[in-house]
Image 1: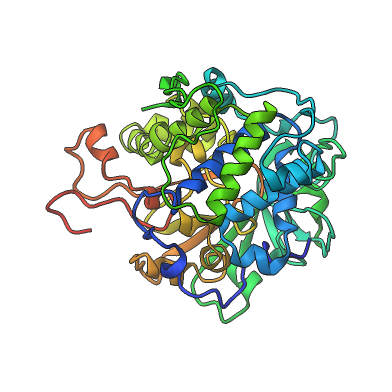
Image 2 (image 1 turned 180 degrees about the vertical axis):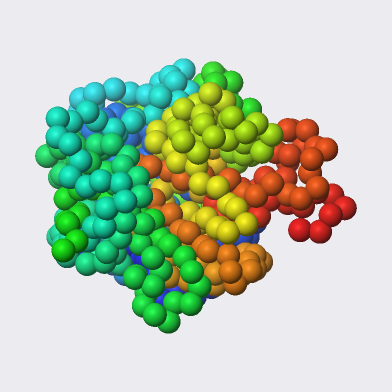
Length: 226
Length: 223
């Protein structure tokens, strides 16, 4: 989706320093408010129920009204998205959300994360690489072009690389394809490539410092440079 | 400390089995705090989440998993050339050998700073970050100024962090668009030959592993 979450290369957001109420650029302090801890842990614990996947939750976050997404702060974005996911999946009702009181029978969930399993579950993570029958369409060192795609739903193709040419730097294997996974269409794994773009290719000739930007791109985002 | 130390044992809710009371004490609750508390109590009532699970989760990311993990990886790579090669070729396995693995770090890539190249990591689309080695991302990493500018003006961002690189130094930016997470291996500080691996790890800052900083100089040396 062409949304405001897709920030690479945007200008006008100002310097970094003013960004947080209490955190500096160097300290290891993680939260501005106590409730942010609760939003984080609720989001992780609800994610562990397996009711939705990571791509769907990203999709919901970036679908918030743009002005809200930009202004309410990181953990409020997470909170509102968690509420939406809970409502969308009918785990809670709007009346329950408003009152904070349970009024209906709980919906069945695949699993409930217990404290004793937290360490094991976090350590295991959820690898997204998958075996596929196809061979990668592009080879290491090959020049490729990013297709001019404007998906109206979730995608991990940032706008700033569209239509630009880069070099295949690494092939990561086949990974779950977020564009399909976010829509509940299954994993549909696709080959994933790390593509190297030169700074001048992306940002023009005024770019004087030599440099590159590397972006991980799924095969459907790419085409042969001709 | 490693995530394996974690047993999930945290004090139960002192207020009893109902579990409605929050582990932290608030005296002044603003609207958002009330809304969060209300949702949390609803989800606990529904049986979807458990208070001691929430405590174990926050304990993990506040006390167990953080940038000290990544610092140990970097220090090892400074003293052990074989480990460094392994790290550069297969960071997921090399890092797992030190017992750091898991959520938001399932697929790791390590990139090394050299006299020619400085690496920086960003997630322009959200906030992807290598949790098992760096913990939770700091606020600035998730902010619009950082996410928007690093890809187009990395030197300008570095300057705000107080890092000025020679003009000739190439800057390579890694945008974490997939479930692959990037760890920067900063350059080893000069005149650090006499230091132990543990002393070296103390010189590795969180920012140096994101690429918005350098490793600290050895005491008595300039950077």
